[in-house]
Amino acid sequence: MTINGASELYGIIGDPVSHSLSPAMHNAAFAELGLNKVYVPLPTKNVKDALIGLKALGFKGVSVTIPHKQEVIPHLDSIDPVAKKIGAVNTLLFKDNCIYGANTDWLGANRALEEKTKLRGKKVLLLGAGGSARALGFGLLEAGAEVCIANRTADKGKLLADLLQCSYTALPNLENSNADILINTTSVGMTPNTDATPFPQEGLKHFSVVMDIVYAPQKTRLLREAEEKGCQIINGLAMLLFQGAAQFELWTGHQAPIDVMRQHLLAGLAK
Ligand code: NAP
Image 1 (cartoon, rainbow, N blue to C red):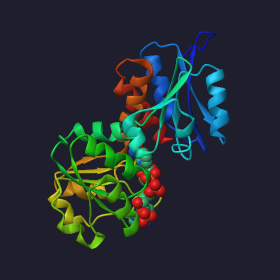
Image 2: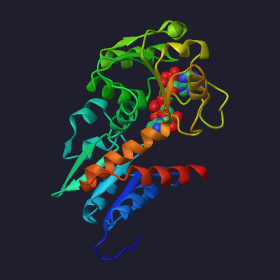
Image 3: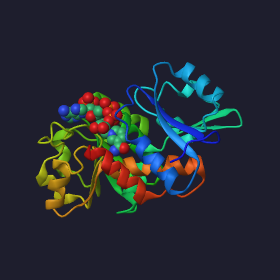
């Protein structure tokens, strides 16, 4: 990659950002298409000041990660309607001196799912009620799926179900679920607690597709056990990849080079 006076600037704001795989993924994609653009990590404590600075410096696009996905919203000039419903923004586009906010987490999750199954009319059991569950829940409803939430803390689960206007089921009822698709949005099973699983293996045979948004390890215990039960499985890397691809496409107007982006994500995870 050659950086020169004409290079266009992109980056990621969050705290911390040193672990982020996005710079490797986006820079590889820019290089693959021969675009004179560069993507840098931008450790950020104060969002308001950061946005003023990014605008002044002529940044074209920025990813937003924890803890700023909600905090960034009051500082936007416009927001995508689904991102507004979700209440979280992970992508900024700077254009005509205005800042537009979008959420590509749900787009990434839906695209990862749609590689294996259609979503319209499908019943989805969503485990978890945190930030990711909220993004995926709204996204699944956008795609015409029927969603049911289950969560360790029932009050939080019911609150999200009310917000999504969908059903809630208590954890002991999980094995009796009649859903087609199971999605884990909790952190259960994530490194270093790789022996943990959010769902009993016996109940997995009811699902045709099981997705885990945890991406370290790539194949969680939930996914291993789901595969043993004959389910199609989707890992968290697919969601991470496709949310990045949606950002790339919004920023550049070009189709994202998926294979190159995947290779660089895998190389980053292997480190
Ligand atoms: P969050 O807002 O903190 O929510 C965490 C959820 O996990 C809550 O529902 C919580 O339940 C549940 N939980 C945590 N520990 C649990 C346990 N021991 N047993 C049962 N439930 C438990 O987190 P988040 O931002 O949604 O992220 C969740 C996971 O998704 C993380 O592993 C993150 O790395 C991953 N993620 C992946 C991608 C991707 O692109 N693949 C993107 C974003 C996030 P309570 O309500 O009971 O506390």
